[in-house]
Image (cartoon, rainbow, N blue to C red; front, side, top):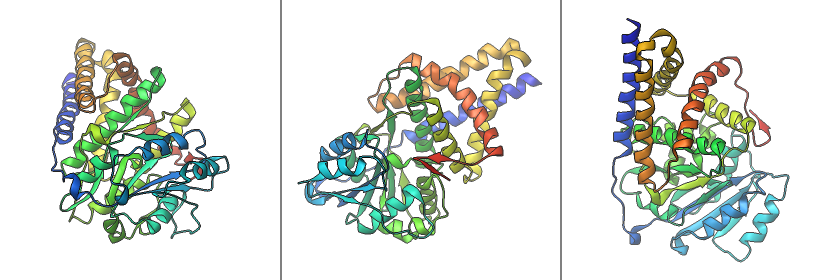
Length: 363
């Protein structure tokens, strides 16, 4: 009986991977270069003196008609040299603009308030957002904007992580895994998540849902905006697996920072609907099964665990290939070990505390 239960749980997990692979593989029409819309790229930066210049250099190298491009860098009341670095870099570059958020828009806090202030000044038809610790590919904006065909309100893209050791390498695999789940679900009409460092939406649709000031506050403001647009039930929201729209982010430098990042995502995920909880529950039971199988069903444990690891590898490998990225086996195996404990422990932690610390602020 126990063996049958384990087989059912691992089979459900495998079926989910197949579904997400189908969704992430969907193709979408793209407009030609002459039909590209006007865009505004927004970067909210707080105490990012180590990263902001690299981000701006990549934005300066975007392949996009300059007359249709606006880049707003928001210095979110930094206490380091971020503002000074921004001022120096954008001098003489008319399509760059720096703002310091002066308005408290509704009850919006932190990064969401910084972005909301920038959108009030944005001239572009399409808003693209990334983070100060990210470097965008030269084709990023053009690729994302080309997907804004009729009735498309939001387009999301993939983000990978820089890596030079197992700790940062497993973070890269973690990002691609989670974003492939997000892409697969979204492209099948069931949005589960989105990430603000590679996200875009029509400005008029943003205003149609009332902007961030009309959305309940969340430490994952990108997810809230995604769900608000989805609830309109009148627009397409897509997540293409396209190497041209890739963004590369700095990984968390240590375990403490990684903990707060995952906790922030976990707290934001509490706002998920039934579909989100179903996916999470299946993953939780599967990883619990990986720990318990050697003791409860020892005869089948090796097959079950091996099946799950192989399924994960090919699930990820296909996406890495499409994104023109490499998937070192050692990074993948480190991720598999890390993922067991992360998936099992995080939901338990959220039962006891939902406090989040991020960018020097508590929520």
